Image 1 (cartoon, rainbow, N blue to C red):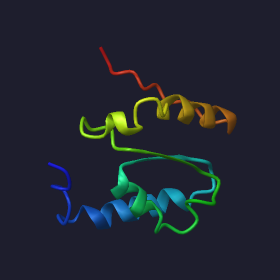
Image 2: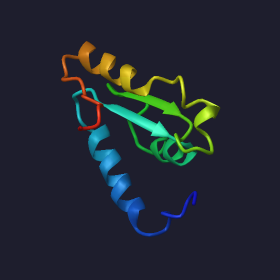
Image 3: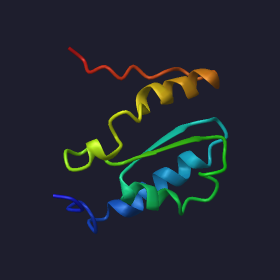
Image 4: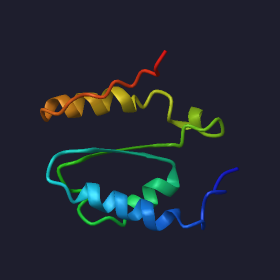
Length: 96
């Protein structure tokens, strides 16, 4: 159910994790899927104008995947950014 994980204490943890990664000097990628993630990240100082790539798309749930998630290419765009900045690419394949 959408939003069922809210108001259970996760907000403090995710806020701290986003801020800690955003404060790093080395380029990172933030995949912001859904309006809740996008609103949360907008409050992090330096995230939107730092050395990082911020990719926004609708949440990949069955309710909204066809509203822009499909075709947004988050995984290949992430790897292209990482390679461009001399960082290791991510192997997105699921293990056999």
